[in-house]
Length: 441
Image 1 (tube, rainbow, N blue to C red):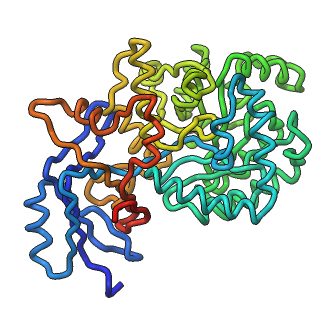
Image 2 (cartoon, rainbow, N blue to C red):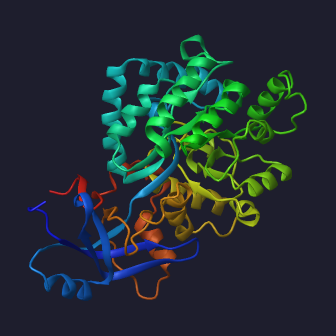
Image 3 (tube, one colour):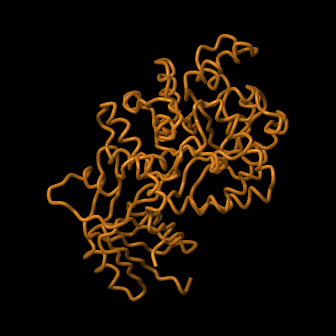
């Protein structure tokens, strides 16, 4: 600790999200971090560079990082992705269920090997830092060690679960109900809220495992995540299955199945939720269940998505249903949340849906995700008292009289044909005031 300065001062253009309609942008800004417990750094000042410099220069024990007009912004929260699908994200996706059975599930079976899993976790951790993701909700494979490998390798704040698959699944990717519940007990007791009960989706997880698994995970304050109403043919398939399952013969919606299993709560994150009935929307609202919206995964096939449809974020807002953005690797083709923000803005613009601004996209990629994980007191933006988690981005000069939204567009937007550039967009990633990734010399 003796070698670490008490204060770190970062100079640049600071972008700090506040809510759907507002973010603070500080030109010639200064961010001051102060060392605390475990040598971690928290924000002690955010404002003009001049004031930041005055504050730290009163003390000998400080260091200054001057980034000129480069951008500082908070790290991302990606609220729905499968870390074990990285190598199938660009495979053909004409149909969700076909894509799963033909490419995804065979690949996930490789994670049975502990050596393979551990090596891939280290590799994927580097990819996350390269794109600036420092938190989120994550799906592993069925194998319990794929949860541990990820939690031990990823830098940031994640809740991670092994997908529970006990029925209607290939033999090589199926666990008994007893073994599934045993894994839930083992992992939730060990990792608490960093573990996430993860029924893959209703067709592959028996109601018994979903119900009993929730009782177990609830004891340890664990989260819950699964998929809901991603495509219309998926909904038809789910309902056709459950009409033949005892006590579920009369379910009238996809959400009703999860509700009967006790899965709905403020600690539950439903992936997609595109095709919901009015009754389902109401129940999502009353149960305070969250949605992870995955625009790049839901995008048209020509944009390397699954063509699932457009999420109605305005309906979610009207109904008071909390939502945040997510990449859905490997349904989504790219890990960068900048690409996810671009897709959210562009798709809604094409459909003439107003309100899908860059300011909203930024908030839903950062602070909204932290709130969903009940971490917003210490993470999600760069307010005083929060950990120093941020990214350094290329320089963008101000234009006289432009709006904040237009500035964000110039800073973040890349045309669809250049979207792969986002993978190398971040210059540096800092976590708790320590540099964890850099491409700068």
